[in-house]
Image (cartoon, rainbow, N blue to C red; front, side, top):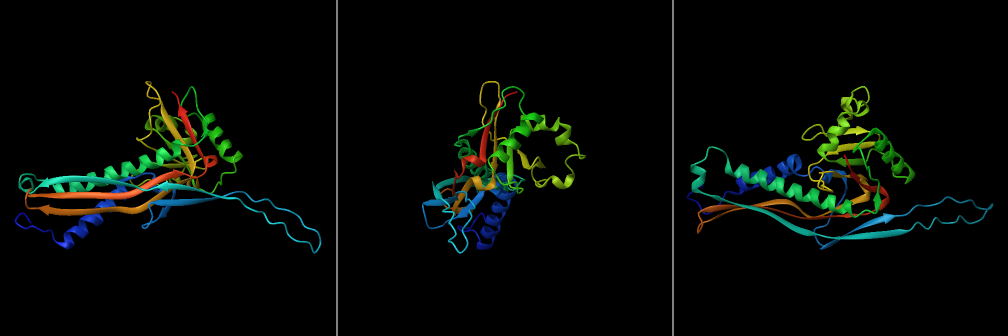
Length: 276
């Protein structure tokens, strides 16, 4: 390969398949927790939001009153993101590890973090907040979040998610009701491969390192949402272009994607300042 100006198609296809696998495995934690729509032809993607209907009675042989469900929509503009890296051809002779694999995994991780950043930023725009002002994540606070979702008629269908910082995850682990298998059996750990997660109190709890610090004391933001409350638009999924440049005697690994996220329903998405 060092003396050729092109890279075989088979190698590029294998390399691209590898970056997609790495993106799914070690890149984004949150992409599969939100509503996703693919659109390869438009710069903007629209997510529809349907309102609530109300039942009514009718007189004998009378007309049924339609519910007249309201329909609103939110738009999101797609963004282009790139993760590129030069690989000097002669360096391949000096190292024992696979530089191509390093570039592949690094690009996948960078795009995965950016995907999660987009979803987190979308959640941050919600007007619904439920702060814990003193003790971070407590059992009483978790019960409060359960009440908030119930009072907002957010579906209890296994699609509620709680995204917390690692500091708050360790607080959860100090709660017997969360940590003990007597309360949370092993089959309630849906994402055990590749990341920690638990189903508890109708939420899938996921620790995440990308949540914002809210003050100098390193207190963290927490996010609670239903899958349908947040939309993730995909114009172009993660892909790779790998080429050799003769004038540089180097290979350029370019991973790229076109995506963005948007809040659809603030009633199904809460943010919280979780102070210690």
